[in-house]
Amino acid sequence: MSSQRSEFADRRREAVYVGGEWVKSTGPLRDIVSPASLEIIGCAPDGTADDMDRAVAAARRAFDEGTWSGLPVTDRVRHLERAGELYAERAGELAELITAEMGSPITFSRRAQGPIAQHVLAYFIELGKRFEFEQVREGLSLPARVVHDPSGVVAAIAPWNYPQALLLMKIAPALITGCTVVAKPSPETAIDGLVLAEIFDEAGIPPGVLNVVPADRAAGEHLVSHPGVDRVAFTGSTAAGRRIAEICGRDLRRCTLELGGKSAALILDDADVAQTMEGLRDYAFRNSGQTCTNQTRILVPRSRQRQFTDALCEMVASMQVGDPMDPATEIGPLVSERQRDRVEGYIGIGRDEGATLAYGGGRPAGLDAGWYVEPAVFVDVDNSMRIAREEIFGPVVGVIPYDDEADAVAIANDSEYGLAASVWSDDAEHASDVAKRIRAGLLLVNGQGGSFDAPFGGFGQSGIGRECGVEGLLAFTETKQLPLLP
Image (cartoon, rainbow, N blue to C red):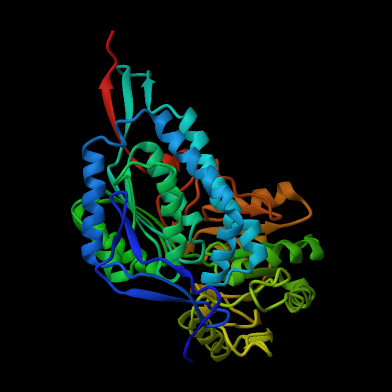
């Protein structure tokens, strides 16, 4: 279908941000297409390897000359505080931009997309104020000074599903520690990344400290393999993460990888049906199913399978699918035709494997344009099926029955992933005890949990390293010891 220009066609960004200047890319301009209407809403540069070379050179120069790392941490914090103020001033505009570019429902963009980005920035600002980058350790051996130095030049690569928050989870701690950054936003949400560059530029960030070049996977791989890069921080698919790990392993380059998930919601026998369904409304279908921590394996006691399945289908049927700019919409379009085709492909795989589609899974009536899929609920799902083992990244869940708690925990842990899970019960303490037995990085109890003060990351194929918390700050440092002089 050919795209048509819309009232958003003035959202044009024709330059990349390198060395404190807006410079013409050596690549073409890419049209940004609304996933809801298929209209062109703007354009942005499609960065190249040459652009990455220039960006790394600028970041390398800024780091080696001490332009940023040589500043007291209090001065670095002040620059980020100003960026936070500017972000807050543009919060409404930025929420609408995210919705326009990738289809996140506007209510969710206002409630979560923008606020998460602001909270991430505010958290690392406050952590930077109180964290001691030089500490004294005394114990069984000689006392020593432990110093946390900045890693150097960081390649920060983020996907399209949370285009601002996931970039800031890398940019903010990297800048606080004194690193310089080359950020690569996803092509689908390139304007979001360039707007962040505008904000930091207006905040007075010194030239070369932050560079932003939207680009595709080929240019991203060039960035990851660049000898001028000291550390890579990546969020994205497990397949892409494996490739990055391969490149970084070859050169012994440090990397943090936040990858995919196939998270389980473990519903215990005493769980309240209404409370659990209200929780899954968010935690299973967040961002139209395009969230790595979404609980898409719904584990229910076999004795109550029908009750929970009926309630789940009733809840999903009540979710409004439609225009993401409508505040009542809960499920918007998927980000692209490719993503819609992927999700529909998995719905077909589920049927072929013998699972029963209890609700949805088709294309919504009355939405002829846009990459829409009805939220889908599968039953008769076995944990060995592909729809229970592979990340779909869309509004598709599968109900899996279990016999007892030991069986439920075993099913939850029977996955190559280990990013997140939740446990639902009328007895929160017991639910917490069960949650401790699940091998995942983020555990929720009755929907509670998830703190920026705590590290976030996964077990197994869900990644390497942690973001947020003190661990997320230290990820951008190198540690050395010096003697404690008298």
